[in-house]
Amino acid sequence: MNDKELLEKSNEILSSPRNQDEEIQALQDTLYVLSGKWKIPIINSICNGNRRFRDIERSIPGITTRMLSKELKEMSANQLIKRTVVDDTPVIIEYSPTDYCHSFGSIILEMIKWGKAHRQRLREKS
View 1 (cartoon, rainbow, N blue to C red):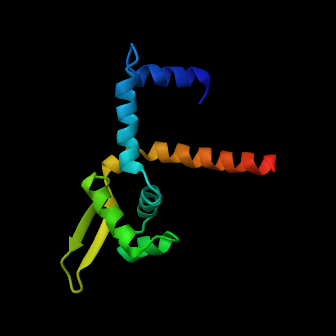
View 2 (tube, rainbow, N blue to C red; view 1 turned 180 degrees about the vertical axis):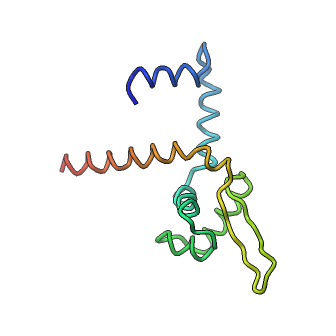
């Protein structure tokens, strides 16, 4: 994003005059919902087609069963994912991203882009 685009985006999002309390509250809300080591990898896994608990768990190295369960409950409470129980034998539980979850897809893409550039920058400095 060039400087002009950034300025336009800033003018669109930020109030005039600037309200720092409101901005910090919005940042804290975002970080609360997305914070931690596991939420974004879980969202990425689900958006990449892993719908069942064990598939999600296998796709994320290092996550424990307990942590995945806790994070899925929080994400469901925050309306980021939908938990569907298929009444079959055996019972099947599937997770899927909500439209609300997709609303911050561009943020995740920018985070991936920044992360790749950052890693490359560190490699070049070494």
